[in-house]
Amino acid sequence: MLRIGVLVSGRGSNLQAIIDGIDAGKISADIGVVISDNPKAYALERCRRHRIKSKVILREDFPNRRGFEEEIVRVLKEEGVDLVVLAGFMRILSPFFLSHFPDRVINIHPSLIPAFQGLSAQRKAVEFGSKITGCSVHIVDESVDGGPVIVQAAVPVLPDDTEETLSERILRFEHRILPQTVQWFAEGRVKVEGRRVFVEGARYGTLPVNPDLEKF
Ligand code: GAR
Image: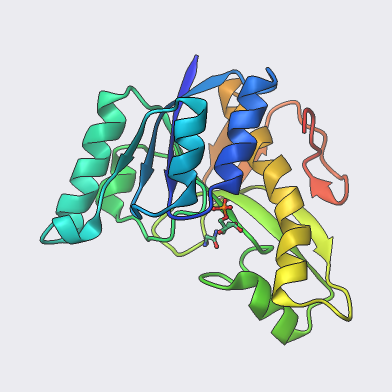
């Protein structure tokens, strides 16, 4: 069975969507460990409630990023993790970290990348005046929110949207495309060919989510 490690920094609603998917039998994976770089993250409370192993690893406890990442890698390996899921983890991982999990680190980002990479993607979409934005799950590479895309969902921006109302509308799709992607990995269907990623057997050409969702 696929064993995932989830890296979080905050609220953990995407982590919750994965937990719920596992509990509902829609994801055939288990969570080996959740790692937070923030001791106050609400995601840690979710772990306690669901009896999921969690660990806080603080950047400031290490003299440099390398030491911090070495500790995260050590914990993930110790727990036998073979897919790393960034679910609201607000740090950039170095090539050193990624080399330990080649094409096996995924991230959820609240925009149709490459639009609005980095922080506050939803606010940027409102301020830009976009009419369609969305969310993406992608393989993590050395860029910031720029790695090969696995799946994207399109979400409309409404005239009276604020950052908050738009974030909420996008989040509903985040909670579907991230668990679905984990299940695609669990089924061994994600094929990476350079920048282009294909999910074997998935239905392409659908909106608002492409490729189409199957279980979520
Ligand atoms: C989510 O909206 C996620 O897409 C975003 O942070 C939020 C975390 O929420 N991630 C990024 O912006 C990454 N660049 P959550 O803690 O409730 O899952």
